[in-house]
Image 1 (cartoon, rainbow, N blue to C red):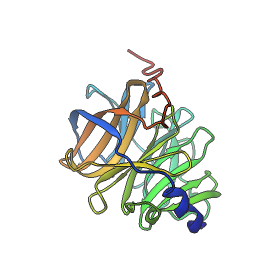
Image 2 (cartoon, one colour; image 1 turned 135 degrees about the vertical axis):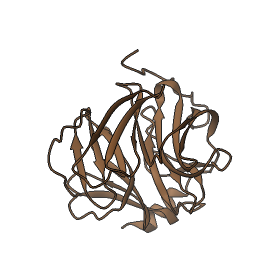
Image 3 (cartoon, rainbow, N blue to C red; image 1 turned 120 degrees about the horizontal axis):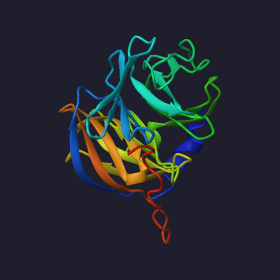
Image 4 (cartoon, rainbow, N blue to C red; image 1 turned 90 degrees about the vertical axis):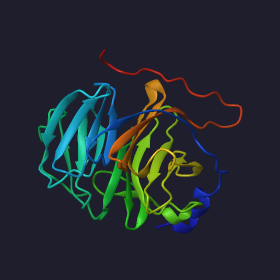
Length: 253
């Protein structure tokens, strides 16, 4: 699993807190996984039940449908459609209207109890699981290109639950739940730790995370209180580098 090299990689950079400013809360039923969709200016929300829900940031429900999985634990967008996971090794692709694009499938021999996931521009799927605590880079056929143990970080990432990617920097944001550090971890595209931010001031037991890069916002789902917190967000950049502009955002108004 190449863990020796990856421990060095994960701890090679200094740790600093991410710049977050709380801007509001959304009350929802046990949000477990989030994905921001700029096509609708809304959030796809999974709550470990059988349904997938899409709501606008004003709270208007736009979509509600079921997959062929017994539950939906994690959600990600891929090439204009939705990928969902039951958190027990099965995945399915569906249109945004909820039409299945194929039967449920497994990632080859990958046996990940997926808590959260994100699809990179090259099609790589990045998974987080908490038993064992690790981050996995794999393709949809189960060809694993990288595995990073949660113990590689300082402090250790012991209960990773949700993951999101900032398209401007390629950085990955991972939330560690209440049984871990109840914190946000920012990683560079290679998995090196850039910083950690305690979240106890905003909520308990973070489960999901999504980024609205076009408005410099990050959303985090907290199981404690069953709500989503929205934060103004500034991504970490290197010394002397300019903070990336928000860029294009919603496709509808």
